[in-house]
Amino acid sequence: MRRWSFAAAGLLFLHPLWSVQGESVRPVVAYIPLQPLETTPDAHLESVFEAALRQRLGQAGYVLTTRPEGLARISRGEARFAVGGYYSGTAARRSMYLQIFDPDRRIVIDALHWQSPEAMGIVLPAEEKDDPAVLADRLASRLILRITTNPNRRERPENIQEHLTGTPIFG
View 1: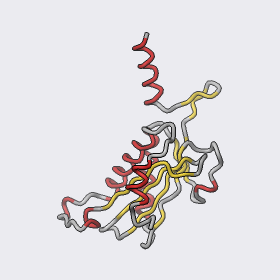
View 2: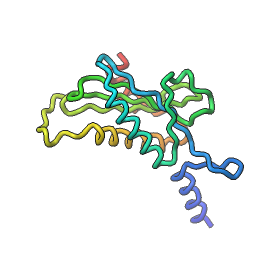
View 3: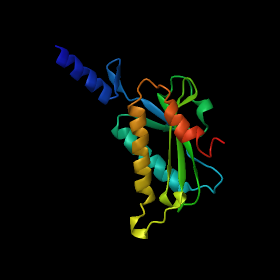
View 4: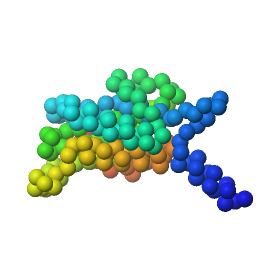
């Protein structure tokens, strides 16, 4: 009996679909498009990242809605999570800073950032540099992992400290 309880609980955790009046409802993640931070806008980066995020979230059982007006305009109960962030530097020396929000409480609950090797002063040969689509997919995967492992939307202060308050976007 206990084995079946654990199996049922595992299935509920791994597959985030909820049933409402007999039909499945996929949880919504509101996407606040990436914003340039002390750099020129990069429409290609923004669209590649949004596409990767949309694909990865869909595979994880979520629906992505784009909300360019920001967190303040997301109604309570409209989305389970909200995701937004910033990027800086040039295409060759890129840094990205992402935040995950609880849209009901209007707070940051998790954060992560990524820097290209070149932004850290490491010079790579051309054949070892990743395509922007590959980097966007990798970063989207990390973001989805943070969302799916935090179904109760708990604050993760160690990640917020390391990836948000300890970065140039905070100061």
